[in-house]
Length: 304
Length: 255
Image (tube, rainbow over all chains, first blue to last red; front, side):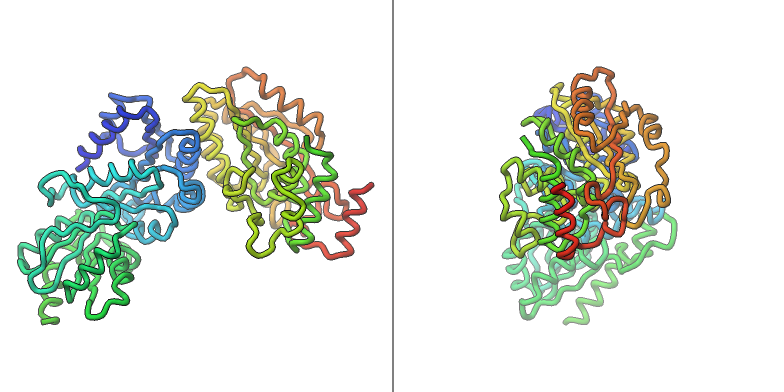
């Protein structure tokens, strides 16, 4: 997934000399290819994220296409006001890449973990919020972000879980992607790193439908409403707080639809307490495979 | 050509009175600065008002430039009007949305960096308040501009020695502001921020400068300049004019 990002970046940089990658002193290995092929299009802005976003706004005003890279704990969270005022208020074409979203930095503690970034960004007018689940979704999301000419937050979570799709995708902004039709009127809805998890859970629960949501904002409400009509239960799955993320988006849209229940699985309203592997942190927050399997089992049987 | 500064001050006081709005002294301290920089600004050069609280001074310039009319200022703060109490980028003549401080400098640095990469000659002028320099983001921008030797940038500090709640010296002391900024590889010039001749000469100096450094003008100003009962009286940061004080202010400006 990270190779895909790196390759796509180099491809875009070669085709447009106005593309500039700004990094807050992060992503060393990720940008080796770009720094080799187009060294003038990479700027290490130093550990100064606020300035980095303001500078990106300024650059975009004089015709550049800045891509601002940082860990999602910093981009967007630390610089939310700069994103809002300097970029989104003026609808400037700046792409924000928030890497390591969720619990990727499991050993490093709360400062490097972000489980509130979707909630925060999607409330900012003019900002597109994308959350790809595998390398094929990432490739398409990156294309859509670049072509949109608008402010975009691209959330990158755990990236080494393997792909779910089998080839290039052609979805548009807002589209939800049905990977598997439901058989018993219950579907799993996943975004980002939880897509792979959801597809594994579907192997255990073969009757469940599976839907991926790489575009959190905009979201095609009509497609979501259709999905609600085909199901009695939607189980949302995200490596993000259950407040304000994927589960909230679906709950908001479904609020006036009768006979649909949305069950939000994700991070409860709390910080991580422990240090440990990524798997360990998922267990702590009960979004590891076993915990989710149990939770879904109960949901299915309770609702029979 | 913009008329005398007294007319700009009259416009500021009048707009604030009709709007029942504060922040009057923040605008009065930058009247000469705004007047001069609006005049030098070419189509390609950019002037950014980062201290959004002084926005009424820019409205006064815009009125003199013909971008606003009497009604715009007379109806300031009326329902449905576009001129806000702080700088808004959607208004012609204002580049950034500020009031939340510490934004304009970085945006200006980004514009200057773009011109620098393009090897174009345009200048970027950014007006910041001395109180605004409490913001860490300003210093991020200053160190970046200094490191990259962005000689096409000029930061003007409105050093009126006050901020919302009191004297800057007592809140975050800036006695050595010039030296501090100089230490980030800036060319620093300290001037009287109310002397139009000096401001204009300094601007010319910056246009012809070839020292390869970003520029900073520390403009020593008086908060509330031109209205005796407001000068250096920081309660006026938030206070509003009643009718008798409004008339007294106008009388002073007619002298």
